[in-house]
Image (cartoon, rainbow, N blue to C red; front, side):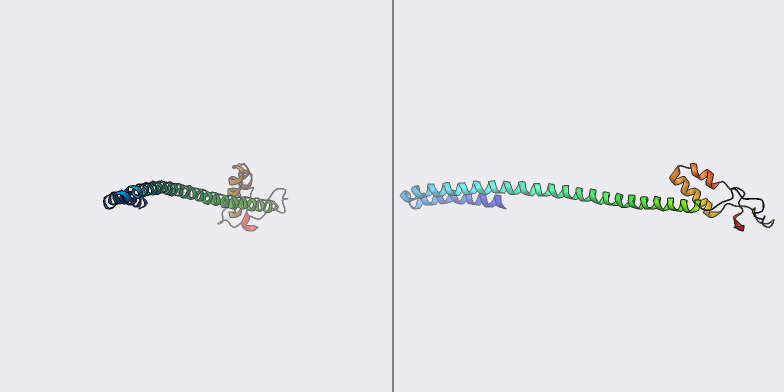
Length: 161
């Protein structure tokens, strides 16, 4: 659009120069040259401004793309930060749970009188769901070493507990 205006301005100055020279031979020569030069300069200035505007538009588009990439990166970092915070909180909760569970005496040091009775013949010994959960938590946080100690039943008959 700006380019078109510059061309029209240049064309008009050329026509004006021709018309002035034909209508007023003496006057057209004096003024026509001045008008022609002024309009030619305006046309060049408009073209130069048009190039500047084009470069500004190109730069603005590039900045927009860059800002979108930065926004995406910040969103991803925020998601990772939130995930890490949740993971950290879960690790603390699991450690607290392990400390609470370790406070229970699970069969070490029990005397013969404290040994639980055997259940009815139809019942069979099975692992406690709580002990199984502790084993899974220990595997997740200790690489499986603590799970062997916790998950191994020591003659526990938890139904009697």
